[in-house]
Amino acid sequence: MPKEEPQYLLSTGEEEADRIQLKNDLIKLAFEGEFSSPIKYDELKEGRVLDVGCGPGSFCVDLAQEHPHLHVIGVDSVNMFPDPSSIPSNCELIKYNVLDGLTHRKFTEGSFDCVHIRFMCLAFTVKHWQRVIHDCWNLLKPGGYLDILEMDMMIYSPGPVTELLNLQGKIFLGLIYIWITNNSPRKYKHRTKKEYIYIYMNI
Image (cartoon, rainbow, N blue to C red; front, top):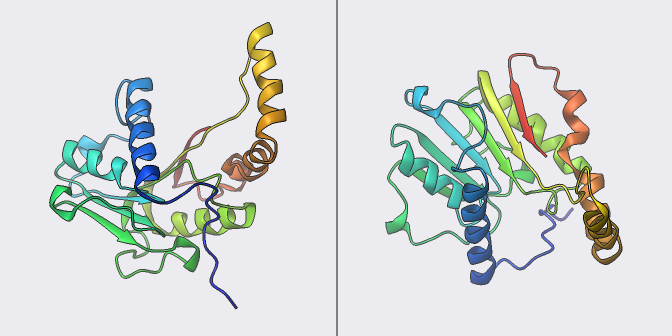
């Protein structure tokens, strides 16, 4: 049986790494900072953070540089990582397919303060999300955070012009719009039954 891989719809080369880095910079601009969740990284003494689907490691490197007391690990099934000399000593970027299960020796149950997932709705199916979120729960310490940030193709409370954008988005983005709608992790909000884990979702 062939191994499952995340279903990336975009390329995975240097140009894609640059695009992801630009997106990371735009997110920081939009949120007036890198991190929008209620997690207080400054208070995590020797904290551990895992970034699932880290791409070129933009989020990981920024977090590690801003909080040198943290140990930040990023994983992605594709190696588009920067030169090792540019990665902080408290940051690790690992080529690893999370659909194989988060069983890497670096990932032990209850060992992370936060698991971060961002913009993976084009890579994961509904079944993938169910499996990955289950694995992430198991990796979190009591009181840990699962922080998921995803795009939403819909513009809410639109005026006449933005309503047209909504319509055009459905027409021209077609299958991508349907994919995002059907594979959003929002569908799993009602499955968050482990009360000692905080699920923080920007969708």
